[in-house]
Image: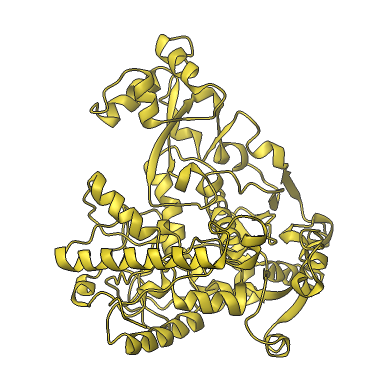
Length: 516
């Protein structure tokens, strides 16, 4: 699925790295790659799915949103935290979220009393709608964004107790021994699947603890599940309904006494023409002047768009690309344009919330609105963000006023979220079997696109034959790149802070063309 601990041992980093290219770890310090190297690297990072993921997708989730890819082992240095029986966590790196010290005993299960204490230590709760009808990859993006929002406001995030899988690999009686089968259309109160045969309308109700390591997540964030909220407020957890993961004030806030709730209407989060950023206080140096020639020239180049890309702004002003970024940023600020920090979306789309290609974009200062500025002073116990703020927005559903603020989201993605211990142990077993099959060499795997992508016309190949040809081509290119890495002894990684590659991978042989 979409799993990416900050780092892992040399035997199964490939298994655990997030499938999409933006989730691959990178070293510090980072040496800027050349254009040709980036191109080669992007070819490899467009790859990246593993056998363990394929198995887990078909068994549990069935809702992956990653292109068919090829994965390579990218082991990283690690340290072991005693007292917690999980795979190693990466050594601390730069960022705004403190990682646990190696000698710290962490990740104990929380009692209801502990949950209540943590929640009361924050400014209140943050609830939102989670769009659980989407595949797990998108649901995970939404969870990452919710974690960011709650952290910015110092609120305790309420996560859904369950997510939903589209299919199960085994027979119904076997799958039902592990979880409940539901009609997705009925459970979600949506008609997306009504035109399908009844058996294809069915899905599986999966506890979130199966998908995410909740104790680990709580080392970094104040998080509770909806069932916890209901229990500590004297409500029956059975009243939690799927219905697209929406927060239901009439059900969930019906406490005694009633819980004060402030709702952010969907159309107020980032209405048309507004650029949502994390915090306006970091942009106090930007002028409010909108009359200068420079301001108007950029405004004309902007047209009806929200932002200008960095290089596009330079081109509009006939500024050399060699001009220092800091100097250009200061000049823009003097003329009423703010520099925002975000990430480039693959193919200039925002389907995949990539965090590997940090970029700058500029916008008129009068179009920016700060999330902290608008909502940090709300005193109601629950702050509820209504509706969908996922697509077509940038990662975090906002841009950032500083690079360090942008790095906060990277910290959440890379260090806070990972799969549970049982899945990592399964990954290790499958990796061992694969290593036996390939004689100890690195190995690759490919993901076959799930059926609904074909039905919806999202698959890049129109037939099984074309899809297999595409997968084989990716595998071949991936093998060549792995061979090149071994021959050159050079590992060029993407500029994500906090992890370093383990160069022991250079001692492993690349895949062979005749590997099974």
